[in-house]
Image (cartoon, rainbow, N blue to C red; front, side, top):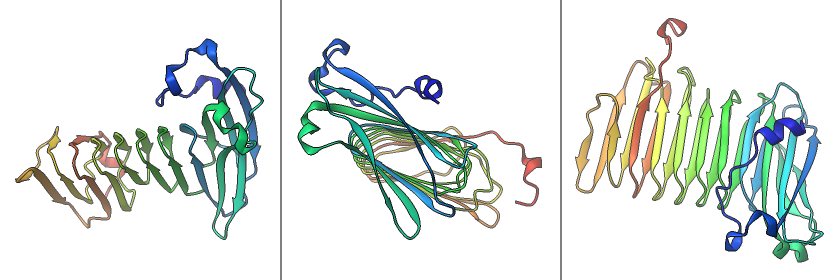
Length: 257
């Protein structure tokens, strides 16, 4: 597991305070193995840095905490756990409040099983999710960049951060929603035979394929309906640009859909 975590080492999307050089802080890695109760969804929050998610065939949740702390600090990164009626909630934290000023950042690499729905939250850190099969990914950040790739329903929200979202294949059969208040939004998606698309922008919309984009004052809007509309995609940036790209798929794999 340690080798996997190292190969997926977090990017420095959120610079350390005062742009500290590597020689001025310590790096500590802490691996964890957490059992996921049967039938529970998974919620992960990290107010200290990034969340990087990859798929695992195991039933448990495998994590590595990447802590950067000031020299000679004894601060430790830890995970707090809470089980609700529907989900296991995991939060990145430090060992004690007095150590908070010694913690420069904590990034999290996590390998998740494909069964649970996922909820991911950061404040200023990035959320990076690669090619997962979970039935739902719900990701939110105040200012961190969201880079998400999934085969199923996606919900992504950011106040000021950039969003790059990819739905890999048609047949997600639900409503995916991608929205940023002011950040730019890029969405890659298949032109599903049952696609319902609604995209709005307070700035502009650009598409690599032919769409009837309507410019309205300073904003833009486009809507597209195909088939029964079961693959729904709603995209919005209130003050940022929206860019739309198509994902190639084999129509023969989705007859009648």
